[in-house]
Amino acid sequence: MFKVIYWLVFHTVLLFSQNNIYHSQLNIKIFGDYLFCQKDYLRAIEEYNRLDSVLFSDTMICKLGYSYLQIGDYESSSKYFDDIESLSPLKSYSVNYKSLNYYLKNDLILLRENIELNQSLNITDSKKLLLVSEIMNNKKLPSNKELLIFNHSEKIFINDLIQKKRNPDYKSPTVAGILSIIPGFGKFYTKNYSDGLTSLLITGLFSFLAYDNFKNSHQFRGYLFSVTALGFYLGNIYGSVASAYRYNRNYDEIIMIEVDDYLTQKNYFIQKVNFCE
Amino acid sequence: MNRTFLIFLVLSFYIHSQSDLIKQKEYADSIFFSQNYFDAIKEYKRLMFFDKEKIFTYYSLNQIARCYKYGRKFEDSYNFFSLALSEANSIKEIFDVKVNICRLNIIERKIINAHRILDDLEKDSLFKEYKSEIKYWRAWAYFFEMEYIMAMNIFNELELIELSNLSQKSYQNHYSVSTAKILSMILPGVGQFYTGNYLNGLGSFAWNLLSVYLTIKAFSEERIFDGTVLANFLWFRFYRGNIENAEKFAIQKNEETLHQTLQYFYSKYPEEIP
Image (cartoon, rainbow over all chains, first blue to last red; front, side, top):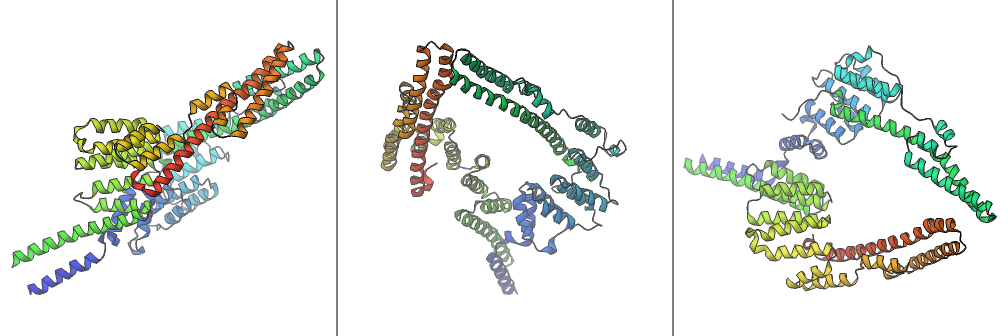
């Protein structure tokens, strides 16, 4: 009897030692989970993708979707979040994260569609994202009733954002162009003081040189400095208009950064599910 | 009989689990040596994760740091070397990690940090037996600093003739940035000639000559305002540009020399340079 057991144990050990047990399906899953919790999403994806589909649970699908989202592959992320069954407790989570994918892709149409398709679920987080997205894309400013989904602190931020969008501190390129008739003033208007001063001094200097040379009958140099002064003058007008456009772009970018920072801090209004407990 | 069986069973599983770890280590190493560093990191992480006894933790962390280093992710490499340091169990392991951190500093041209680490190692009596290795890396720090004479002296002291000759050769091919700048200050274009950029030197000389001529002419004709403008906008611009150019060429040539030398050495002894 013992001989048989010896024989069995010996051969079991031998058989196991042929394969690397750390690459068994179960260990791949455990290790994948570890990588996911270590925020090593790219490697976690690789591990999960090595698993047989029979081992895929909703949790794992969500983890895969989340990992793809973290590495910026929004297409794959959405695909995984789509796979969550409608009866799953993770369904609202997946819908919200799908919305986040569309928000990050700046795809307003799909974001709205995603919300409309899942009206029966608790997806307030997605609705908040949609409103922010619409404000940012200048589509529409939300009504007071629509703002009710935000809590008090969120409402303060959203109202501030709406104010900035409603009365943006833009600089008119036309006004900048007209003001630059006096060299540098267009740039002063766009708060580009150092460039404005440079424009004023250089155009003034070359104009004076042209005048001075003509006065002293140095015709050639007079024309030379005139052409240079004209070049700087036209450049000053063009630069002022460009400066106004740049100012407006910077203004929009600053708002975008503020919103991004706020949303990142708030996890894009989406309630976190801790998969790593 | 039962006891024998039990011992056999326990031993079998113990040996089995050990051999699995060794197998995983070998697998990770094979990926590392095939230079697939991304996957190698994953396999070393797997080794660490399943190694409950922490037998290979130091080794894995060290290898992960090396993977990041070869992948030019120096910040991650620092982090993993630091983790490896906290897991080091012997003086040799501590020394190795510290030297690796020093090597990273040398690569990143943080030479002051590298010297500081080497100073600490030198002062520490624990590492008395590694004096020559410390000197070796000190020489490399000097080499990367382009202090070739200092590097040559240390390599000489360590009787590393090839490296010593290499340092000497690099010194001979080295251009002094200060000399290039001073030459260009004295006579525009000469700094560029010194670094072998003859055409640029000639151009620089000609522009400076022309602008000096125009400036002097304006002043001699008592056109003070014209002269001042020409001096400021033309002559000084070319004069300053000429000095900056000489400096840029000297730095560029020195970098090229260092790069070529390192490439030659790296192809021959990849593990012996930082």
